[in-house]
Length: 283
Image (cartoon, rainbow, N blue to C red; front, side, top):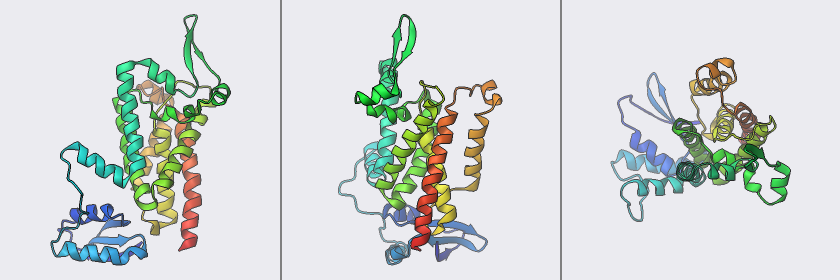
């Protein structure tokens, strides 16, 4: 990271922060003893940052012009899709699947589980993953990531997906985010399926992959602009370990896809190690 400017503690930099993200300028603000410090991730964006900073100091408009301002949620969604289309699409699909589960019931779950699920002679019967793939049902490798079994499950996963996914897309593009989503989603699902579990779902495997990726990028390639609070890392890893214990089951968190969490984290760390190494080499 490259230090750009010091602002007094009382300066409201919220509009500047929003504008920098809107212009896809990787940056970070830190609270120091002497004030707020603005850091720049990519030195190639120095001129663009300084022009934006000058306009902000003059009180001029710094947010990108919109062709037509939409009112309400529609406008916000349009902005979100432009800035982080893959993350927003994954979030939107998850919300759609959740709504369809509420309206149509178990038929939606049966269509998205990693293998086909049905009832034979009054008992649940499961298909084969090999047969499913060979018959063209390749979506089942990823689709369990979009299944959520309750509001808290959905909200928790979508919150972290948006927090980490938007960073990846803003700093490294939608292609990188799509690759992480696919590799981590499939990897986490296969890790959970390998334990013999079929009825599972959730974006948490991808969330833990993004956590591992963003954390390693921030630690090994700080100039990349990634940032994650250490307490958040501790909390999420602590939560993963907690759900693996008998204590979690005792308080109502026993049915958790622990292997998917761990599989996603391993994928994210592997990708983070590789791409942070490339970023260090380039700088």
